[in-house]
Image (cartoon, rainbow, N blue to C red; front, side, top):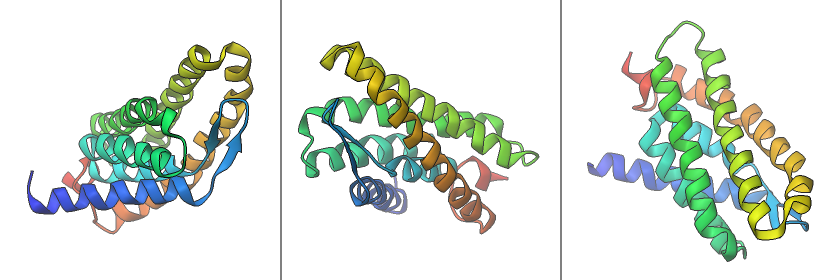
Length: 171
């Protein structure tokens, strides 16, 4: 991994952490919060690929939990958000088609959002029981949809500008 990629991953990790910490809506049922950090994960994964999505998503989101006062979520967030970023990047890399790039970006980000919602639902079920997990489900879905609405247009704009080194930039 060269200096350029290392720097890029560090900046995107910071972007995800800041996006996660900037707007936080507390979820008392699960002692967590809603945020737009997933938008940064979608941008990292769609524009720069699965490895960057994994690093920025997992480390950036876990760092935000740690700095934001939610240390009990750090290990779960590291795995769930890392998997989310990796899955979005891998799925978009698999699609690789210029035709329907917008549709593929939406579908791939939807997959990542689904993994995030499912991952937190399973974790919350084990930590707090199924009722609080069920109560948090709609909030996590709103977080995924809101982040998709913000992240996908930003990512596609960056791709159109020729930025990134992910699958779309390799055409």
